Length: 116
Image (cartoon, rainbow, N blue to C red; front, side, top):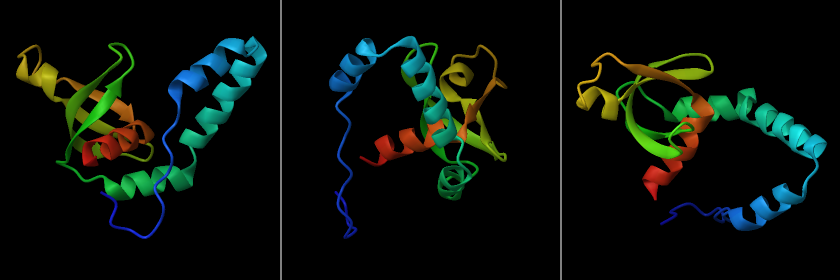
């Protein structure tokens, strides 16, 4: 539920996006990748995300290797990254001090999902 007066942003149609990406040339994909990287690294976006994060906050991050969300706890905020404790790995006893360093913009997307 959105309590603000601003309209909700429309969700992306990932099936339509994937279809368009499958039709794109290799050059177009490379160019799009550069544009996305630049947007994710923008200081304005990172600043908004960092302002919403706090040490000790529990949330989820997207793990590219497993293509899944993983629960974590924020241990430290850095300029463009957050040091987090991966709770699944810690609880499994594999290595209690195992930490993953994640780009803060990734965490922002997951924080939005956790609020829904």
